[in-house]
Length: 143
Image (cartoon, rainbow, N blue to C red):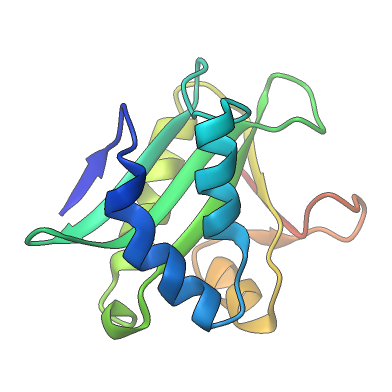
C-alpha cells in the first residue's frame, strides 16, 4: 500500500535507512537529515513524500520536489528506494507512477538523477528519456 506522508516519523524510516546504507546508498539518510533540519520537508506546492508499506513495515519511499535547478514548471523525482526483499514486485513502479500522477498537476516536465545503470534502465522502462545536456539530471519525462 502506498501512502502520502504529511509528517515523517523518522524512527519508522530508520530500518529502511540502515538497509540502504548496507547497500552503499546514502540518499535515504540524506532524506532523513534534510527532513529533520527543515531543508526539505516535501511540503511546498507540488511537493509530496510517499511511502510503500507492507503491514506495519515501510518497504519503499519516493519524493517529489520542484526542481531547484530549473524553473517552476519542472518537478524532480527524489530519493526512490525499495527494500531489496520487496524488489521486483512492482513497488518501485507504483511509487514512480504515484509521483508522476501528482507531478502532472503542477509541472510540465519531470526530471531525475539516476546513479546506476540499473536505475537508469528502470526509469527508461517507465518512459523516461536519457538527458545528457544537464549535469543535474540524467533522465526526463514530458508530462
